[in-house]
Every structure is written in C-alpha cells, then in structure tokens.
Image (tube, rainbow, N blue to C red; front, side, top):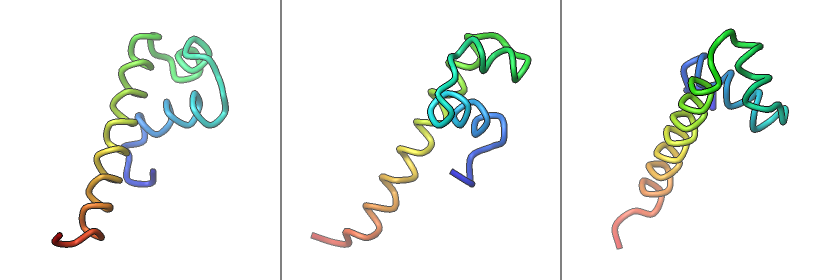
Length: 62
C-alpha cells in the first residue's frame, strides 16, 4: 500500500479502510465521485497486480 501514489492511496484508505462513502471521499479530496471511483479501482488493480507478482516470485518454477 505504501507504493501507491498518494492520490490513489487516499481514495482507497478513505473508502475501504475508514468506510466513508464515495460522496464523502469526493468532498474530502475535492474531486468528483467519478474520480473517486476511478482512483479506488486503479488502486485496487495496482495492489492486485503487486500481490500477484509477489506470489509468482515466491512460487518459483513448477
């Protein structure tokens, strides 16, 4: 999570961790709800990709 850009990390933390609505997050960050949706989706995708890479690197050759 520390490797996420600050704007993606903030959107993800506010919605997924703090449980704020997308509208609340948008107001806090000063962006639109659509922007929050996009940032959360990108953050989740980046975290998923990073986790996939870690798992693959630890699995080694089959």
